[in-house]
Image (cartoon, rainbow, N blue to C red; front, side, top):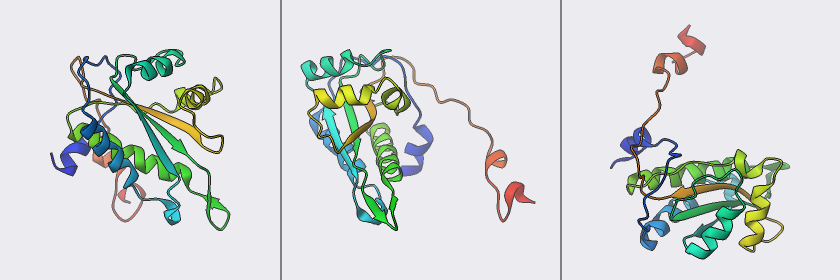
Length: 176
């Protein structure tokens, strides 16, 4: 699949996953895609933990309430370390966002599905903190997102998008 096809085929998948294990080499390729993302001032504020051990996965899924992706055979946990990059600015949100999108595209390219779960992880319940404790994440890192990885059990549908003309223009807003 080429890059444009991966972009066009990527969407959030919230359905069930088959029991098929994701091979380690595919998980490594996905993680490498995330780590190759651009990073503000090259501070490389994003780190990743992939959980594919069924026992650890069960512990992690046990703290996610309400449950999501509980049938996924692998889960990528996205960590950020807030580091000042330039003129008192921190670009960690941009860094991990780029890493997540790279991984989502790699996931689709390899024939799997996923969904970017962030609000569910960083809201008032602080589910990310609970997951971080299970995974022994140091205090100076924040777990900001989870990406389930697996083969879709059901049909995967791409939601409709607004037309190009409604959202993109040349030379001025709304092309005028």
